[in-house]
Length: 276
Image (cartoon, rainbow, N blue to C red; front, side):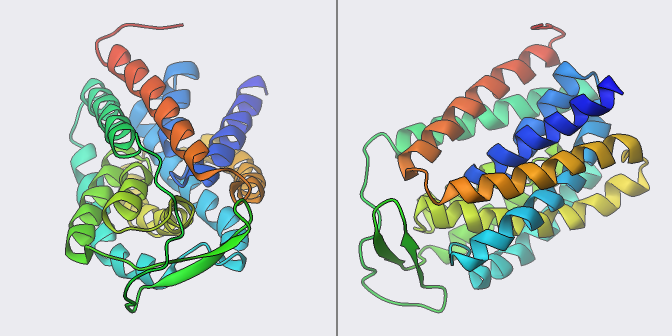
């Protein structure tokens, strides 16, 4: 019973934070399941992928109403991301647990460094786009109390990064949000709130493609998955209510702190060093 409760709380926490910063919660969920609850990493990844779909669904109800999600852009990028997700899932089934942990840790540390460098100088959001495209959009920002318009740029580079995000999702069970958010924000020019919401929308589709492989390999445990998903549904819904009220730079700082902590912990575990 205590194990079940811990699984629900894990999902609640991961879903809440994941829905706010647009990473789907997998970047938190996999380390918690493996480091604290001793769930084998392949099973943790399989559980995370199913829970990621629940996070996406629970959070999107509010994001779409607030017009934070760029659905047209998300669907276009997902063509490449879903293909990468299948390739990543197939690769993961052949890798040892320690290798997966090391790759996971190095990956999130690299992302945190990129985010730190790119956001070292605060840049105002909401400048009116100079030109419009089929992916251009806008939303009302409750924090700045103004309408924010933006134009999507660097589409070829964004498509390539989306394929890599899919590989990361299928390989590590993180939904690919750790790549999708920086890609949408730093490469394609979406404001961080729109990038987080659009990433959250995309991760559900990516996870659906990867989950088929993990199910076929027997890595999805119904008991563990159902408990985590129960928590994720509540956490994702709650997080979406707070997301539009959080300062953009606050979201970036949360992401950097979370990624550094997780990256260090996973690398230590890869070398057999327990931190608790």
